[in-house]
Length: 326
Ligand code: A2P
Image 1 (cartoon, rainbow, N blue to C red):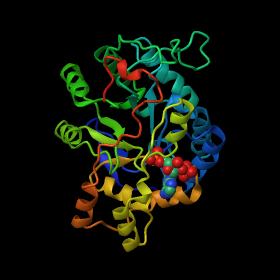
Image 2 (image 1 turned 90 degrees about the vertical axis):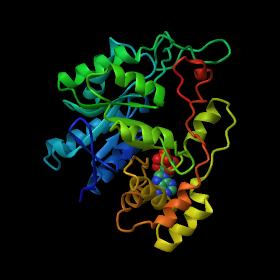
Image 3 (image 1 turned 120 degrees about the vertical axis):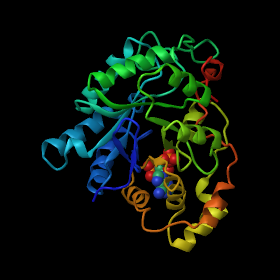
Image 4 (image 1 turned 180 degrees about the vertical axis):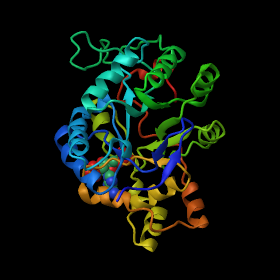
């Protein structure tokens, strides 16, 4: 049975509050996991070209839709305008058309600008980024959010995207965009979990009728690899090991992950936990048969520590970009 809680977006469309994240899900495991996820009721799937799994997802979706097991209208698929080379006017429609081709879809439910900054692809373009001699990424400082957004609006007019939004933008950037847009951003996707609650940003989005999707709701332990490969030392927090979370989990006979997710959806925020493991996908979906009480919610609210797991530190030098948001 499908997960039935939705957020109503300013675009007039509705988004299932619970989705499946696919960042760092490799092609082969994505195929198996997505088949299992659809069978257990996931209908909201989040991907991006940089995750390198759109083709795998497209193959599975095609199979489910063409065999009549699912209707296209039951699905909510999100993908993103790539940051490397794609955050550029002419490339907006081309990028979405490439994603749609890979996903084997005629339209996308939600198209997000993946990040407010732009980096440059290597000349030989195997998907790698262009680097300076010191290993830092080559920045394209000419990022023009307003111009890109006009192209995003064009995608809605052409019926290629039902809703459009942004990811990793800060309040100043959203505010500037909103002053110049015809279509307001329907969704902001950001890192959000007990250790990174960003009350000002959340409050701002509520007042602007922008729905929030929380990425890394479980703390994205897998990101450790990216930092390691980039030679960056980072101690990532373990959200599953927080005493208050463990204590509440025990009380409800739920896992720590389920407590962390339920706390988010109770705030009216959408979550996209990534898993390719059948048991954990089940667990992450099974969060609607209990309710945290006010005292427990407040106990978890107090954990906010401004700890950002995905600060893009694995892209050396990206914090020098004029639109770096953090
Ligand atoms: P796996 O895919 O092996 O399940 P986030 O959504 O915050 O990015 O977290 C994803 C990470 O957390 C992945 O490493 C994923 O691994 C793991 N994960 C997902 N769901 C659970 C769960 N219910 N319990 C423990 N780990 C989980």
